[in-house]
Image (cartoon, rainbow, N blue to C red; front, top):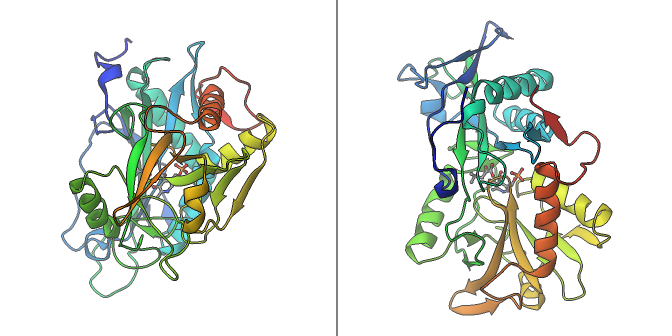
Length: 341
Ligand code: PLP
Ligand code: COI
């Protein structure tokens, strides 16, 4: 088997159909054995729970080729755990954690030719998701579900390489729990689409959402958490119950403290404080750490001292260490790396 003929270095964050995906069905109160399939289409009844009441949840994680040619995934146990929490919120039955990890391995292994080579700048993005599949017309949960994982090779989430982004303070709420639209850990993504289109139309890469109750504290962006570096070199990341509990962020706090000897704290970050920060980045599976150079608050510009040309120095250290761990250049903490055997 040979790698697919893909120009890995040119990939953006898009969908490329790969050869295999995993499917398991829930019926009569149990998941079936599950299997890989080459069929990328999902055929549903017009009244399926997912179509009428958006009963669906998802996850996102990546597979990497290491420097010595192994294929690995990063902390899939945490994605399994978070998917279970998301599913609970939407009355979807849990998919067992060990089966989730096994399904991830099966999908990566079956699509090994699509895992971008080490050093290409691309990775294999995996999208596990679950949805109500049988007809429901009264407002109630479905009684049949599908769990699926597909994968697609991806490049950087934001265009322009590692150039710092300009983002805006959004007038919209992040639309946390409830409402229709697909959900990850209680966040409603469909309700964020109008805000992201508005920001893009105005020339911004992302939205900075403030807390919907007081509109004074920093929450997150549409697809990533915030990470700030203070002028005295401390890593600070917003604490909030209404943002996605990012696995990348949790990992970066550990990396800051245990690999780089930095102070790191998760705490409420008043928007007022942002103008005094030295560096700012967006962190997530897709975003990795994407630096922010400028934040525009209704015409008022906050320019981070790290500037618009490159990542700030501490952000860069965090980035190099995290990606070093993910790509096998730096030894990982126990249990972070899962080999695709
Ligand atoms: N916040 C939002 C809204 C996201 O969609 C994501 C992406 O998964 C994240 C944060 C980062 O989370 P993680 O690091 O687990 O990918
Ligand atoms: C991820 O990083 O996995 C996400 O869910 C972000 C999404 C906006 C692509």
